[in-house]
Length: 373
Image (cartoon, rainbow, N blue to C red; front, side, top):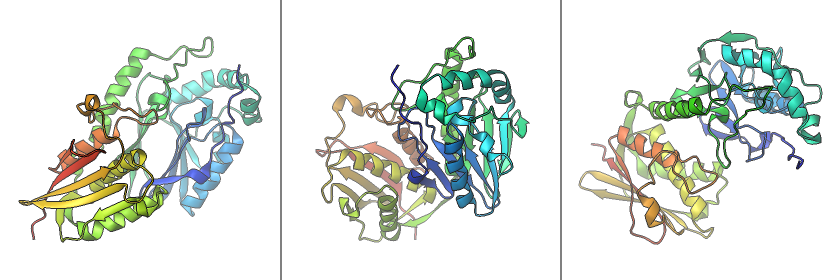
């Protein structure tokens, strides 16, 4: 058997994906989860620990730095070692909360998984040196955690990848942590490991994913919209600068045509999510030369056109009809939800997102309501 890559968590790669909400990405390394750090005015929640005490110690130190004295909580998406078997490091520092199904998984299947993972190779065994199966502080059937000005929902999903799966929902940011229920860049792991585990259910897992799609749509429901007047001449340059800094993209790759006075009616956070997704896609497919991604404004009969155009290869004709379908992607590292959710957010704001097949590269257009004076 090939020795696994060292499953090291890299906190230096943490990215803020919404205000006071950071993700430490797995960088597509096996046995490394995407770890969340979610803040409110009074407390901070950590989602998953990484495998072993050394990884967890790094995560805890990072969370302490983010928290700056705020109370710490920890939850895990399920009981598997790469997600939960570092929780012992948080003892006395954070309150560890899990759902009832996951608590049972830890107690009955945890010891067997610990021994099984130690047999995966010397690298993983070293990571698990000194690790014990964690014991939660709080067990619940379903839980809403108030972090101060931000609520987080810890929701068991029913049997799928494991018997005790849960998702962690941050409604105000439109973020859902799914653990291993949803995978990108690889086939989902089907953990049928007798005698340690026979709880996985393919049928149940598919049903859970179906519900997750609906849940993601609900994270940005119409009744949560806070539409406001947005002066694009002022807002767009600041947004592009923020995007370039956070995504580590040279600012000269963007050409912004936003000189005229144009304002739209839109939920500001929703517009930010839509354009962030469009720019991220454009940067991925465009060349690295200057002005390879253009953002252009046009005003037509009280309707504002916001265009994002890149100089890449564009979208193949056979894929254009599927662009906005959930889970459709041609990128092995993509989720297939970005454009789908962007279109839903536009619709909720009485706007429209469409693909325009009129240039050599890709051209996405958002049609918005002009704000009344």
